[in-house]
Length: 271
Image 1 (cartoon, rainbow, N blue to C red):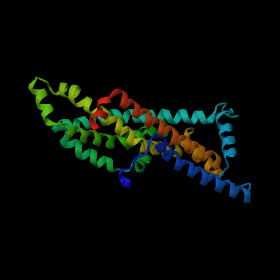
Image 2: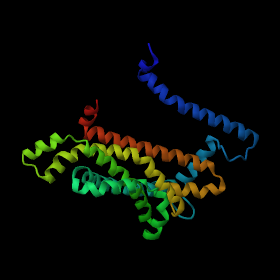
Image 3: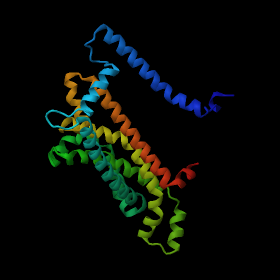
């Protein structure tokens, strides 16, 4: 049998999924053990016990100055900013995408504008956001929203243009007006794509959040990483990076489950 036609069974698939992570951990801890054996004060590749001690200090021991658990405070602050930014971007992206893809009079000016806006590097306008919105929470949320809204809107616009014209014509012959078409025909077709777009943009949203927190913040996962970097505290940085990755994966999984539960017909349509 040709290799391209061979598919792993369930146990084989699970093994193949875990294998690269196991290899990565093996390589890391082998290198860490070697470096620490040569220099016990080495900070570049901390051992598992050093990382566990650092997380225990941050997550389960009250900070002497603030009286809070810094790890969970950072997590809550970052998730709050990320959630607000994603919510604003999803709403604006859906509205702009529907307007640009379904209404020609709006699509003519909006489509080129969205294309141009999606080409602007969001991190390049971060100083402008700090000047306009200040150094508080609003500038961080706006960076996420501005960074991913044009991309979501363009994706929604493209999906709106792919809706068969026959469906729109049939609905109009039955007396549907513009609002009825959008709410009853266009919107249900685009909501699954919105969830998919959010999944695709999660990595960018986290990038913008970490960048904003690193420059101007007093808490958050990005703030903590860049705060301890001056001490080369890799025992803190690496667990924080793993935690951010886990949170992003859980958010992606949650969106995928919402898509499967709320729009089961979408998966069937793709098949």
